[in-house]
Image (cartoon, rainbow, N blue to C red; front, side):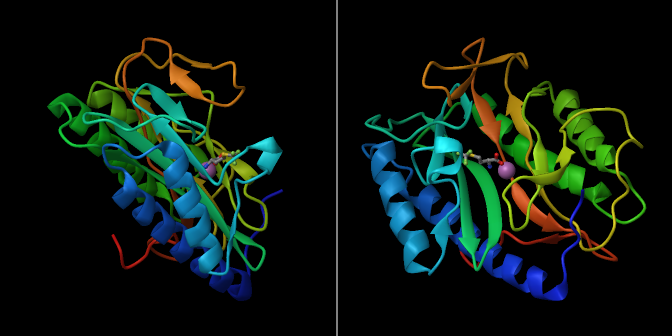
Amino acid sequence: MIKLKSQREISLMRKAGEITAAARAYAGKLVTAGITTREIDKAVHDFIIAQGATPTFLGYSGYPASVCLSVNDELIHGIPGKRVLRDGDIVSVDVGATWHGYVGDCAATFTVGEVPAETRRLIEVTRQSFFEGIKYAREGYRISDIGHAVQQYVEENGFSVVREYVGHGVGAAMHEDPEVPNYGKPGRGPRLVRGMTLAVEPMVNMGTAAIRVLDDGWTVVTQDGKPACHYENTILITSGDPEILTVCGEE
Ligand code: MF3
Ligand code: CO
């Protein structure tokens, strides 16, 4: 069941989104050579608390941190720890914050020092695929129109979209209906109507789409060991252009 949001709920989701986007930007600034992923997690955790919000991911299905930090061949759900970031690494930051019961969810991939041109292209194509997808996040289209556009853009640029993980509705719960795949035929799934709030999150591999989950039960890595990228925002379907809720002055 898709939950349409009232004006009151939308106001709360705007604030949640602003804090979440600020947390993503803050994490991105901390992504530098010599820091550990645990140090970034701790700083972002404290940042979210200082804003009066709570870190949505902490304890979610037993997840042990406030941020997912996925390095190089790690696609999503990397657990912060003692890993030290080095020149040439890429780091996908995925973060959620809850404000008065409503969730913001967003992600982006950041670079450490000098990164190969092809890897920079992967990051840019992943980000742009989100914007290609949300051209269809409008009344009159259907859910699968978003993912169809994401897949087409990613594949025409020579990269692969991951199938096993998808975007989702978001609101009082981090994961609500509907699922928002990053692939598929157009014209399928629920019709988009104003008041829907969705997390649209392309997950893109440089090589093949194949992934596996590490023994920690969380970290998703590419099977071929090549780099992977993630970009995500929480959006609101309106009577016109979609509104990106995970925005802040820091970007
Ligand atoms: N952005 C991710 C998602 O949409 C975050 C989940 S990580 C978890 O599923 F640890 F919170 F599960
Ligand atoms: Co999400």
